[in-house]
Image 1: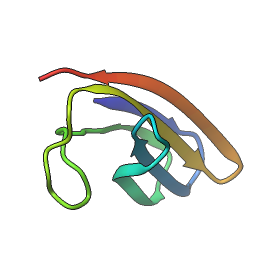
Image 2: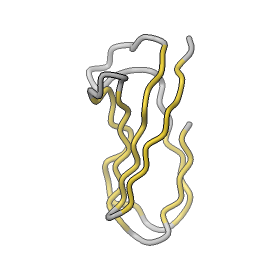
Image 3: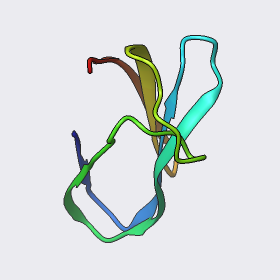
Image 4: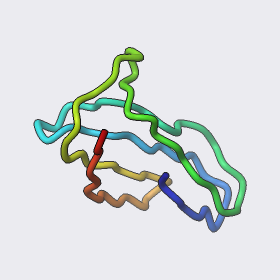
Length: 75
C-alpha cells in the first residue's frame, strides 16, 4: 500500500520501476480531488504477470511535485 495526500486538484501518476529502471506497473494515472488516498500494488505488472521478489522503486508525480521511494516485494 502506498498512501498519499493531494492538497489541491491535480493529475497524479504513481508508477513502479524495477532496479534496472524499467516501468513495471502504473498504479494511478488520473486527476484527483484534494484528499488522502491509498494505491495498492498486488505484485503484478501492467501486462498482468507476477513480478519477482526484490527491490522496486515507486515514483509519485503530481503537477510539479515528484518523489521516489524504495520498497521491497516479498512473496
